Length: 239
Picture (cartoon, rainbow, N blue to C red):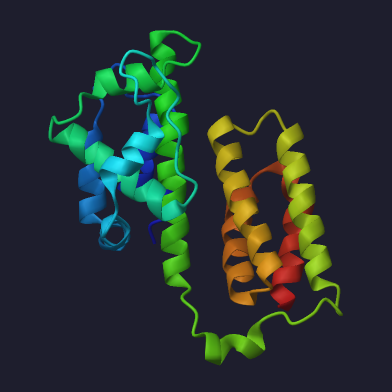
């Protein structure tokens, strides 16, 4: 069975994040093609770009002053992140946006020209990948609210919610202190932990279990998180 890391879309995103394309061309056309060939991701993109105001959202993300470089400001909503990033990448493939000019202007920050590629990978491609996978995961665990109400956590009498909150907090603390965890992996883990904490706040058992399983898969081989892994596994197995 193909894992997320083996999927062409994820692999190509990771190559951008690791700045492997600095000397190999941008390969954005391959990234767009990987989405087109992945039915699940293609459906997500189609839904996100429907009625999406590209001109307005692009204007909010970049500087209106063409003479002043400005950080690229990503939208907060996952669906808008997917739509905006996908359409920008599509415009690059269609030669309507110049790739080199775009990243040089909006991802230069305080580093050298080579850092632009690194910044593009970390602050454009990584949020795009995370938002896409998050929406896919949410799509795969659609809820029938009427049928699932009895399965939701109604109170904290058994201490389950408190334990999950403590686990999420401990996970964040360990990740912050473990210098061996790569920056892109750290960002990805923080992204899913944030979503996990939101699910706990909403007391939604199905979402808690789904995101919990994602986190278990991500932290299984991280030695510093072995204790947290065991605690999370024990709580989820009882739910």
